[in-house]
Length: 150
Image 1: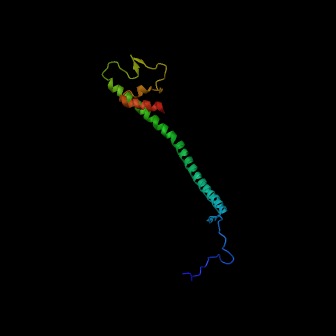
Image 2: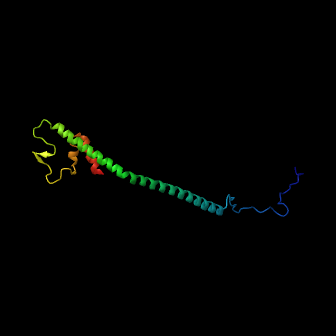
Image 3: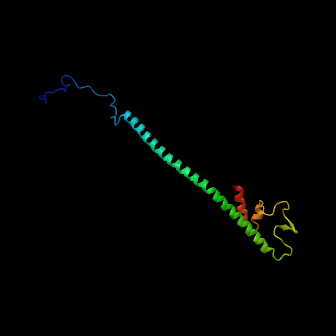
């Protein structure tokens, strides 16, 4: 076994190449300036779209207010008409209820008018309990409660 010659491993001629141990930066996918320009472009387009939508919403609100202003006199007249119809029903109900009582006149108290100094065709504010005199107590309570709440 002594006939085998031992050969020592030596570096190559000129030496080994240097070892790269520096940080390898990540590959850039997009340019930051491109991202900033894209953000500004999207902001500008969305601002214009928002402004167009805002103008449309404001126009719709103006139209709704105009409709309300136009309808308000009619709605008030209908409310007043319903109020007068209910007063008429109350008077008719009182007449029907008290028809068998002698010397009873609607709007009088012991043959004296309730309001002496008021002209005959003047409408007075009716108290709520008198307005709901012929209604069920639970209904009139909730109606009065709603009236006070608003």
